[in-house]
Length: 443
Figure (tube, rainbow, N blue to C red):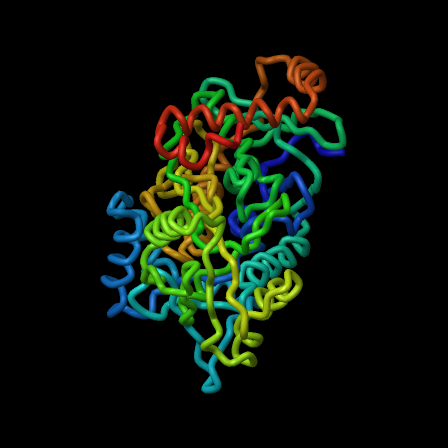
């Protein structure tokens, strides 16, 4: 059972949602909800790492790498804020006991990934997202002002006069309305509506469908990143990602004749296009990834999770070519926000993959996602802290019983199907070419 009112509701328990909640002052009562179990967020799955500005001398290079990957459609102010905030974010993560790999001399061990001009990516082996999100979750559980509810779905928002009033939730088949002074959407992306995706299946973009129905400003929902290298499988379900960092450590892509056909460190969209073209030429559902140049002990140390998973599927990274294929991975667009996470509805914020503040442009630079999520989650919390003391709980003009009756009468399966159609229709409206290429078989 929920209380009827919370100062802040955070929808989502990934890195962005957790960091936002942790940066809201402990004086305020916070509810966090998630559709599944706490750990099942896409940020928990992130393998490669998190970027950090190396120093003033690295700024121009990092900025250019991000812009080039985004096809220069990025919001320059957003990019600048992210890069200049990175060192403070890393310090804050370390204060939460996040452990980044170090060299023998005790300094950070940086890696490089596609489209980066240098080694600036921090990592915890190949489970960086799990390390970061897990430590943030531990801290959130310690906070007495934060209540966390699993298996709880936001089915609508409560807004009147373009001002947020709260949300409508479904938990265990029971629908209820919960008031809030501020709401932060951190619901992730849209991978669950795609047949082939690296995302958890329950991450289906519900907040986008809700936003579209409420007329909330959206931006570039058709800017969807297809990751070039996921482990090929004929089985249904989430696709296992073979991190960009594997290619960063020298892995090569091979065609059916075992020949290299692309520079593996080009931006993801370029590599994806090359793989798709090669698959068509080979009349195959996959190409090969080879890491056999690296000694087995180094592979196991650097990529223990990837090594073990591939081994379970019958492939030994130290001696076998691994079949890989592109799959939906990340949404660069989403609910339009400013550089503090504010949406077009007063009091409603969006952070992480749910938000579009323009950092990523048309294509995300590898390992910028965790950093961007944390930077802008913290900035949203700053505004919440500044404004919430002047907010009162709203008196709803609408009858709460009508919301409860409406969503109680609709099955969740029907609701998910409606959301999927709403999102796919919007993608088709924005970009028919992308829709026909990647989405047309998702209906």
